[in-house]
Length: 115
Length: 116
Image 1 (cartoon, rainbow over the protein chains, first blue to last red):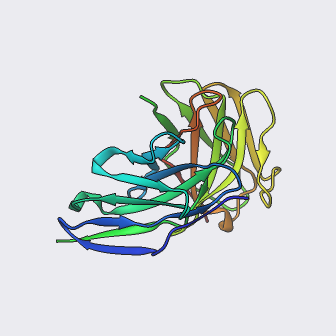
Image 2: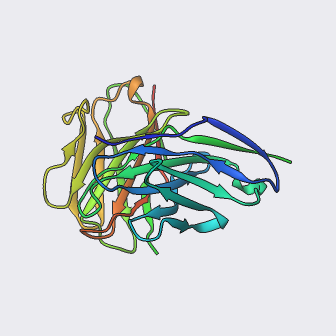
C-alpha cells in the first residue's frame, strides 16, 4: 500500500519569500511522484513529476521538487512567491508507473501569500 | 497538449434522480480514465478506474451499482450517479492517461454535483 503525508494543511508566506511545501511518501516499490495545483472550483494542474530520472525535478511556474529516497520525501519549493501562487497543492504517488493506476493523494496544503 | 473536459461543470438535482457526468479527452486517446471524488476542503479520493471496452474497477467502499461508469470510446468516459442523495453532493473529477504505459494523468476541471 502507498500513502502520502503533507505536513501543514496551511502554509503562509510573504510575497517574494521562499515557498516550501512538504511531502513524505511510503511505497513498497520505487515510486512515481507528482505535485498538482488546484485553484478554487477548478480541476488539478500538473506542476511536476518524478519518474526515476533526475532527482531534482523542475516544473512550471518556477516550482521544483527534489526526490530524496533516504528521507522518503518530495518537497516542493519555489525561490520567490508570487500572489498568483495562492492555491491548494497536492502531492500524489503512484507505484505502478507502467500500468493503469489511480493516484494516491495527500490531504493537500493551502498556500497563502501575504502581500 | 493534453486537454480533458467535463460536462456539465455544475449540476443541481433532486434527491432520487440520476445524473450523468461526461469526461472527454479532447486531443488525445485515453485507454484509461479515472474518476475521483473530492469533498469540501479535502483531498481527492479515487473512486474507480475505467478502461476502454471493459468493466470499470472500483475502489473498496465505492458502490458500483450506484456509480455507473461507461468507457465506450478512447475519448469518452461517463459517470452516472444513480438515485442520488444529498450525501452524494461532491466535486467529481476525472483524469485520463494518454496511452498505456504513460504515468501522467491529465485532469478535467471537475463537476460540482449538488443533490437537494
